[in-house]
Image (cartoon, rainbow, N blue to C red):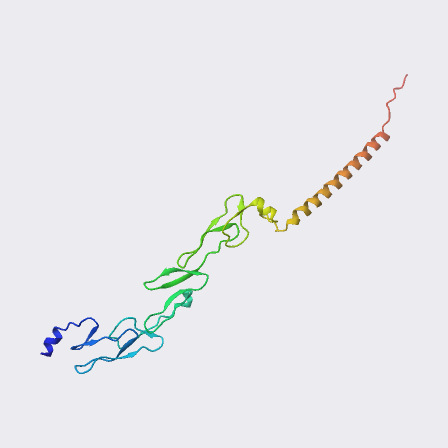
Length: 211
């Protein structure tokens, strides 16, 4: 009679087979402490800290909560509970570059869009920033700019490509160059005047001697 029951054992929903019996499952967050017998039902106890079961079960041990790998730039996004495993996510400034069957398994740092480029697409939890070079005749002066500014406007604000960022530097250079050129012109005019005077003083008229 017992052998026939084993051969025909087909437990119903919410039961699990153990030996010749179909025992009631323990609820999520619990595990089996003692299997049922012909005279008693399953004895269940709660999972301890850092362990869980996420569905009705006939397990003798709760599952261990997942640890997020710091080397992969992962941190707990959702903490483990008695009924749910840890969900890992990325550190601030990172995005998930490899998503596993349940959650993220590898994070990478967002790309920084440097001056001279602009942000074409902002990164998300699973995608990187997309940078784009500024169009000809425009530029940007800060990291992660969302637009590029035409050069004339940049010059008015005191910045030109390749400049030192000081709006007074150009006028200072112009003043110095003007002073040098003016001095050279004055000296040249003086030298020319002196040379002309010497030329007149040393001039001897040609006198034709008669025989």
